Image (tube, rainbow, N blue to C red):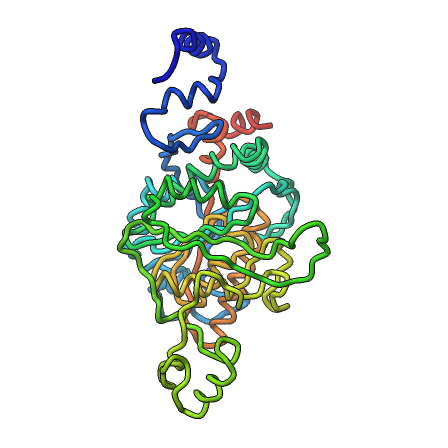
Length: 421
């Protein structure tokens, strides 16, 4: 420890006064521990371990307006038409830190393990966004308009109100919880852009380990840009990390067929004739296709999503993007999750591909949009005579409020309401 006696006394006085220690002193205090330190204001290694009970708002066993019995894929109670066996997909409205902690430490952990464990997490965490103000939200047959809740205001303020340091603190704890939820052969895709990609890479290395960093995927897209002062920003970064070195990856399922755009015209013509073409490989080799590299330029961006898919959600990602990710890192029947689900692209694609899913978002508009979208997927699958699962909408109810405001759980609800007015 390369500190003078004077510096040591200064640190002691600062601690006594409850004042922050200058960064240069912090570096000196830890210089002999490791070569590189990841540090920011408010960083803590503490992780929430609460296990709050989930409250069921609604269960949707079949598309609205249908009067026929649900698909025979499930065990159903005829009197209630509610699924009584097997995994029920879950759309959770609430703070994902509390949701993750409750999934990890509560009774639902056993349910996740019975479903085979969590094989894949995809997240597209927002950065520097505004609050989710007022929206119409439908639950069951009722539709109401509500302003942003006090809990949402607190969560948004704590996440983005202090800039990058508060954002990293938020992500650090949540990513640690996600790692612990993953199965041993599970993996996580973290989608980000130029604002936070370099910082998130360091956080992911610390949590998962640099040895478990599988890929840095560059998703390139083309769209008009009025920018003239610099090169237009036309790519996102998607980091792929695994829980262990024994991770699932379906390299043959996601092969891209060779076509005239991927090989020379001469090679393409020779292959079409059944002759020898690309590097001595015959037609059978071409038909197998090629594994995508770590830069993807064949999937359009949100601005080019088809009208049938586009929901008007600002950060919506195309289904083709999630289709490649889900196919690559999970199998049919596996459980996948998205804890910043936004418009619901991940659960929608997971449902279409026969995966189980958990989706979560803090915003009421996101949950409303996802709910409506998943009902549409159910209708589409039923029309095509394909199986689908029921899903339930959950929240942490009064327990989330008690946790946020440190309200005694035995206090009458009227008194609880007064404390958060």
